[in-house]
Image (cartoon, rainbow, N blue to C red):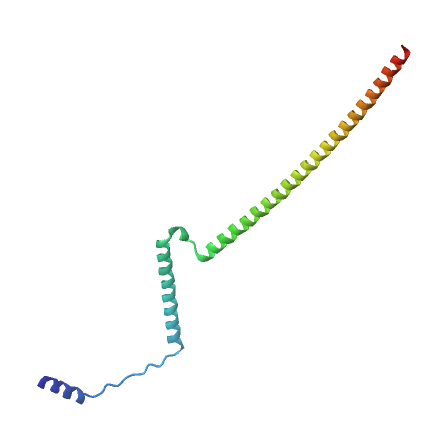
Length: 139
């Protein structure tokens, strides 16, 4: 206990040290800003390193700008492919419509030919009956 009292008394009698106030100037702020920028860059690099460790396929050593350009190129290629497929679909529909029209035209021609043949058959039958009646009348 005596020791604690002696220590407290010694400390209370010690002269207070002067505290220097450092005034910052523009150069100091620039150095601090550069240091902060460097720290931020290191933090981003470390973050990218950790992300790449988790998913190597996502990194491939490409910067975000390169990845964005790659995605834009892929999107453009996809749009061209979709446009090509749409053109093919339109062409296929047109071809199917033409085939359908051609089929309908052919069937219509067959139906007309069938009617014509039936009409000729009736006329021939009537002619044969007339000839048969004429021959029967001569006897």
